[in-house]
Length: 110
Image (tube, rainbow, N blue to C red; front, side):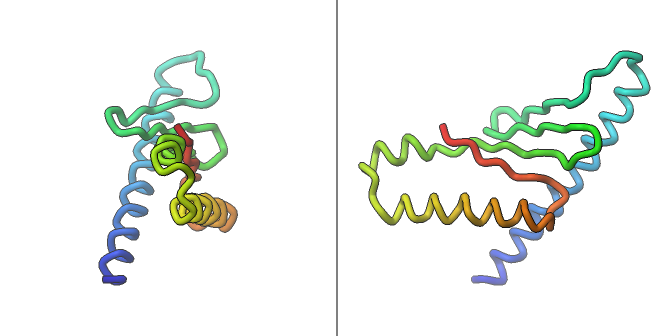
């Protein structure tokens, strides 16, 4: 079971790293085609709740919406759910600080 999770996690990371390369290539192409460009771009993966923000010289930021506020209202602050949410934000923060991914993850509560 853990092997399947690890393989799935590696596949997601590999896909996102390939996507960041495509985003950077598109950004470079847009910079060549238009003489006046603004720093940073935003790409939406609608209908998925994921947006990718890019800044020159920085890793792309992947912002994904999580329904944490709605879940808290529905469960009336059920402690295991709150503990899992805190754990998730802590793990994501640790991954971002270690710079192990070619992207930066940013969960956004809605």
